Length: 96
Image (cartoon, rainbow, N blue to C red; front, side, top):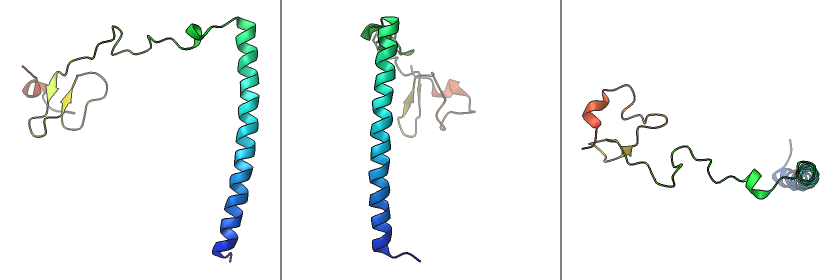
């Protein structure tokens, strides 16, 4: 059975090995990405489009549609329903 100190040494050696492999793979990935950017003449706008949000395509938040009367928690009615409303009649939780 290994001692605590032996296990710490093994962990440190493994951490160093992980860092080395991670750094190498990251460098390889950067080279591949740069090559693809050059080949396809991509720009930052091509890669990082700010209009990716479904809920806020016009830049504004969606107002909540439902409220949990017990906690005051709200939900917009979009996406997965929270547990407090899931499977229940939503009419009684409507705001306004």
